[in-house]
Image (cartoon, rainbow, N blue to C red; front, side, top):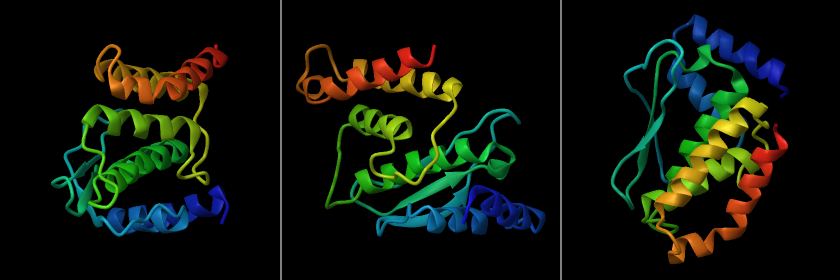
Length: 169
């Protein structure tokens, strides 16, 4: 299915106020599912121009991804990347592939939004969002601690992020 067909289906779900079904349709069609995923639920919306999704649940336990009801009012490329970010958290919090450090989880998830290594079928973001999410990745890298073992582990990826941001100017 191409993005135009995906949008057609999403519009039908929206018209029938089936937002959770639309989100499930999206993860099926972009191969984002994982056995540690407990399902979608609603969270409070930010203002009309803000978008926040979260993966919630204890580490090592199934995760529920909370989405706002207005999720599909936003650009599909952005929505897909945001959902992929949270679905990566679902995988990170699986007992078989647990990533315990929050800064490491966030760095990996923002890195995924930029490079799509785990979810190659997710579309590339616009330069605006690449810069924005690249800056977030670098912020979480910094929070790992200057010269820490974690920073050393992600030195190459940090350079990739910096180079990508620089290429968007």
